[in-house]
Image (cartoon, rainbow over all chains, first blue to last red):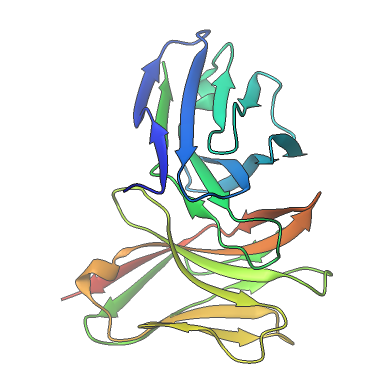
Length: 114
Length: 116
């Protein structure tokens, strides 16, 4: 049983389109995250949600909007896609707010904007 | 300022030998956590090992151990008895609390290649 799943695994789209990436975790975790990994493999936090509240919003363009319908899901919506949005997007989750909580990652969604 | 520094873009190790992947960090927070993740060519991020800033002993998980030197702010990953399947990117990360969540800052990674 997959702990953190993302769909789709690959996404190829045209510039200017709007797209969504879905994330689900079945670990019963309270906090979920979105990370972006660029072409140089650098990973950076984008958002995190705890109990359906956004608690970190790094300096990402407002074209990106996370939406959490419930504790087990955190979807990422991207409007007006740009070439620079091409990257691998990872969803992750952790249990609670304690300092040592490990984040478990999904398999990643490879987004290519043409 | 870079919070996590991995100075080795690439490392090679002979199969069955041990290898150390370097990681240094920068924080003024007395409470923090350090993590290592493995990213094989298939792309997923796999959690390997965790070290808390207040942990007295170095963390170990099977063939993985973390050489935690707090005064030097280093958290090197040691892989013993390397296997071909260990070939992957390895990322060091530090947890920093912000707004109550565990925000992870990642290093740039080290690509490990195990030679048969």
